[in-house]
Length: 318
Image (cartoon, rainbow, N blue to C red; front, top):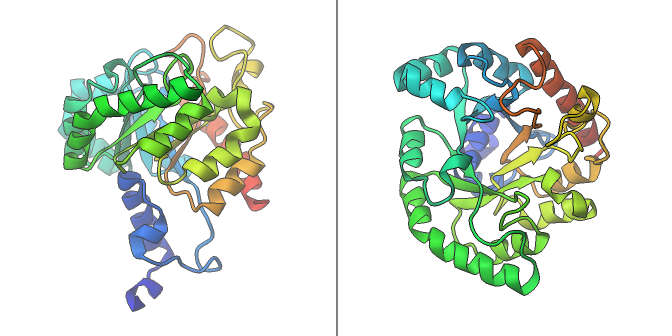
């Protein structure tokens, strides 16, 4: 216990971020005690999506990560980006050297094309790079609710058992998005997932933009689901520019602080209250997919930081 009192701020945040990202556990479970608020003010654990930069080269993206207040990168594949393919082309060792050069960790591999039952090889690859989370969608009925959601979530979790067992062996967490047109879309399904899920290596990638029909429920869902069942959160809003071509102003409203309607103040308060230490990712989808959200790397980073500044202002009020 005496050692815990002597943990420095820097050491604490580094250890907490790494351990929490890998396990989904809160700071209390890492150290067995919570440091005093005056010593350790609450901080969000930001991660950067490579897809925000379209198909820019990793050598140009990785230097930007630390500029956004993050230490980790979320690697995307086509059609949203091509950085996963870039790594295959350059080789693991070259990628490791780039990470080391820019003091960045591999936090997440987002692999929607593989689906939840096709992650075995990706989890091995992620483990080889000391990655934390593999992220994808679900399988099953589209947007079930009520009793249908209960039975469908139970059946899906049964199907996931061998994949979760492998994730547990490797120390990897599988995060499943509450995507529209999929199993975990409705809040009912999210609640049943939390009720029936038994593994800390399986969780939800909580996407606020897919909860736009239930925005008033988001803070309470954060309290109910986090941190135990949510290793990853998208800070993204719903916008008419999310799937159809719109003005850049409207498209950018997916990002916090760009004029969308979602109030993040009660959300970050809920995250602070539960001491959420999982990854949070400022994100949006451009139209068409695969292009950077803005023309240059510098402009993309500035947009992420504008959103982060808004989130941090909300946090000061929490």
